[in-house]
Length: 223
Image (cartoon, rainbow, N blue to C red; front, side, top):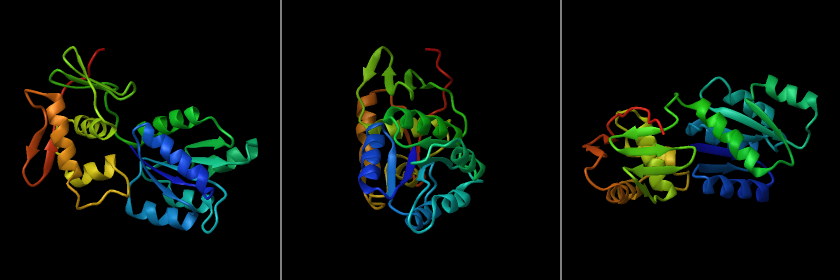
C-alpha cells in the first residue's frame, strides 16, 4: 500500500511514517500543502493522511484536489468537534481522526481505506500451494510458514493480487517502495530473486521478458 502523510509537525509526520513503514506500507511525507499537492500530482497513492491545518495550501484545498479518484483521504485535526468532522467529510474526506489519537487506530483506519482504494481481492490469496494472508501478514507454502522481509511480502502480495496479470518492475517499485527508491536501481530484481529462493520449487513467479513479472492466478483460500 502506498501512503502519503501531509503533516506540518515534522516530528509527528516522521514518527507516523516510521510506524506505518513498520506495518509494511510504502510511505512518503510532505510537510506542507504545496508539497503535498506536488506529490499527489505525480504519484497514485492508496491513502493520504492529511492534516487539515497546513501552511501554504490548506488541507481543505488539498482534499478537494484529491477526491474523485481512487485515492482515499483520512483527515487529521486538533479539533474534534462534530461540526469540524461534518465539514471535513463534506469536503470529500473518507475518514476523520481528531488529535491526539492512538496509533493502532490510525493503522486500522488506513488499512480499511486502502482496501477501498483498490479493486476487491480475496481476503486470503492463493497460487498453487502458496497462501498469503494480508491481514495476518503471513505466507505459507504447504505446511511451512515462510519468513519474508516487508519488501518481499509486499512484492508477493502485489503479484498475487494481480490475478495472473503482468506487473512491471516500475509498478512494483511504486507500489512497494517509497519516493526515496532509485528508479534505476536493481532492487526489484534482487528482491524477486531472494523471494524466489524463499518460495522454493516449483517456482510460481514467472518473468515476462520486457514486461515484468506474473504469478499464475489462483483461487480464494479457505483457511
